[in-house]
Length: 540
Image 1: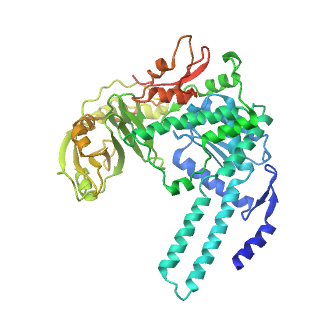
Image 2: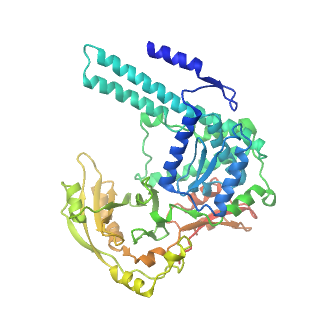
Image 3: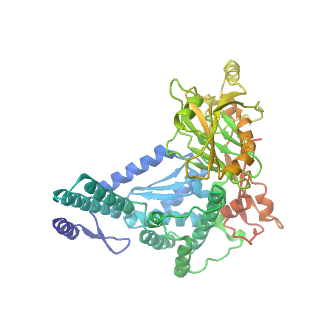
């Protein structure tokens, strides 16, 4: 009772009118503390992903639009920094003092107005002080937890288990309050975004096209998820549903249509916002940051580990970051027709151990014997001669140093493999580990996941042939690989989506990806004279 009374007193003393929403903000967090949280969060993002080429045309353009939109908000007098993070993730976020646009978001929108909507939406989170609201809710939740735990402890029947159970339940509740933004906050940010768009000189109806673009992207990512889950969508648990923070994209489209109406279809020559945007992102890097790998049509290149992994026709890849700047993370490689997929990760090798002892250590109950196999083939030295991301110092290497580097890397290496499974599971697994040539204390670990024993027997030789045919690179060879990049083009009369999609340097789902990148629903085709995006592989 005392706790509730205290919260009521604090509420009466801590409510203030929000100039953006017109409502009252109940806050137990000072603006100074809110800013500290924003600084810490932005620092985390920068440490994890880094900035994308600050001097690039795309980064300068995004910053320009960000400053233009934020200047019309109620918080215009408050400094805000717009960062383009060097991450392939389809996301944008805001934290007090900062707006983060992930590089991976940019390929899936197609005009300056859509970019402005994304920035205006994130600005809405800042002006409505949604972070402050979440922090305040967390303080209240922790206060209630403390009181509840104390009450249980004072009970004559109290025991440690009861105290711990009470604390764990309330901690989960507190976690739910701090998960990104909730549904009502997302809806509020959408409404504020439409206002800011109009004030900044943009058509607020662009919120409709931006939401439709997000729906197209979600559809593509869902197709990828199905490929990595044996043709099925993983079912959501009740907790996942509770923690779903964004309104369904279809709902957002309908809300935007109700508020603004259907956006006009502009003639290509009159679509100036699209022209400016396409010019700015032409040449933008596509995919994960180069240090994490380059997924090409027929191979996955890991420059940092100096390894090339061949990819069969029809293969699709996805990357999951580790959250650590220099850590490889995990690559997923799926061949939808087989129903199996492969995980590729990098681990540190402990002193006195090799890949074989690692497998025995982590998997003491193996389904099959530990095998020692030779892997590796000669690599073709046909990679390009320059790498734009390298400094002149890094790209300059004496003939003597190059010869030593080439002699150090052998075309073959010894790896270890075994199969295993878990009790009560139909899935079968094969693990393979081999030392990476880049450093003496790193190994690459491949895990092949088969849906059942029959698939393992049918597909194991084919998938193991991928591993047996990996190539090891010299340092100089690894440096010369370039990232994939966006390329914008004007559609000609008679040019079709199917024709353009067939040229994408990806092994599967080319048309789904092309449509997602250009917000072209199934059944529609390109408009002659209009600008569109594709992906180009600059490597031979």
